[in-house]
Amino acid sequence: MPTADPALELTQELIRRPSVSPEDHGCLEIIAERLQVLGFRLERMPFGPVANLWTMHGEAAPLLCFAGHSDVVPSGPREEWKTDPFEPVVKDGILYGRGAADMKSGLAAMVTAAERFIQAHPRHNGTLAFLLTSDEEGPSVDGTRRVMSVLEARGQKIDWCVVGEPSSSEILGDTVKIGRRGSLSGKLTVHGVQGHVAYPHLADNPVHALAPALAELSCRTWDRGNEYFQPTTLQFSNLNAGTGAPNVIPGELRARFNVRFSTEQTVERLQNTITEILDRHQVNYTLEWFISGLPFFTPRGRLSEAVERAVREISGIEPQLSTTGGTSDGRFIAPTGAQVVELGVCNASIHKVNENVRVADIGTLSMMYERIMELLLTP
Image (tube, rainbow, N blue to C red; front, side, top):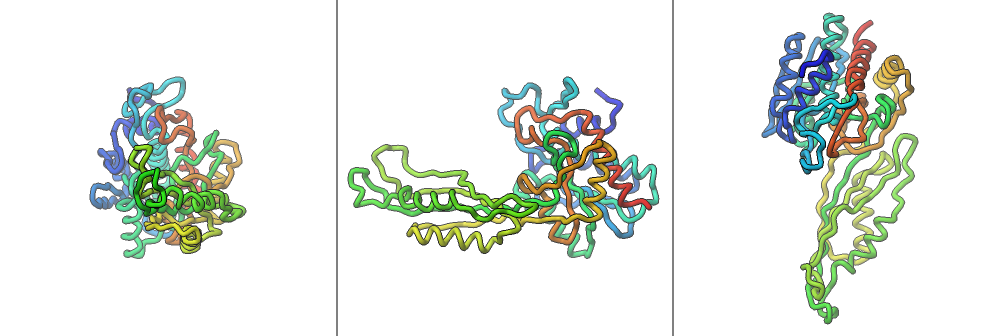
């Protein structure tokens, strides 16, 4: 049903598109059509199955970019949803649907903010840009990472970037992300010798071999963090061994772990420490490494000041600057020298069944985005 709130209406239209990563299902085309009407120059950058959109309004520096993603995680068990996850439903001031919080409401808020801003300031300073992808919830290989490579090769520079991820905790605007921890994953295989449990001297149990090292790794204090970052942590997420029979010593153990690390660490130091512990405990292993992203941090500057001011003026609260949470596509943008912050709706329901967002927050977020544009791109 149509609504008088353009931001809510666009959010609902996007939710109806079942854009499970890396599928976009036309979400970015809906946005492209609206931005083209405003005079944005559109550039579609598809890579593999991933849809990417890069748009600009204006030609001069500085360049303010709003970044986000149209893809969502799978709905999960449909029977656990109160509503159809891809049919937006408003009940008691709450909008339900997959992507309601992460992050189709953020996309709608950006677009409607730009519509009002361009109408009021058609000859604004600098350049207003959008960098949108359908590969944030997936491998994150053919999305923002690839677009940034293209922009860098051209010498196009983003000065300020607002990522519309759901950053808020309890109240819209209470938390603004000014960085993220790095993410290092390991795929560990411990090699043993299978045998009968009654003849352990003829076998080599990989579970027993790993246990002391696992205990040391899981209890280790890696660092104490710093003013802006939580301490580095390591978590084992998967551990598999055995045939299912109670009388067979397994011949192999497979494990997966992840390290979320602060700017107090480097990838090389973490890798060296982990392998040193495994070697010291005489574990026979092979180990594959996967780096999802390096930590990044945006110190206080014009962007964070504009975002804080916009939140204060629109909602009357003082946002907390934070680096908590998982990774975001900001990790591909910040290394180019851009100031990057994340401001979005509350994140309590993201990736869960019955994902939702407060209806009032969508319009309020749009007003915050518009104010950021005014503070950075008008005299």
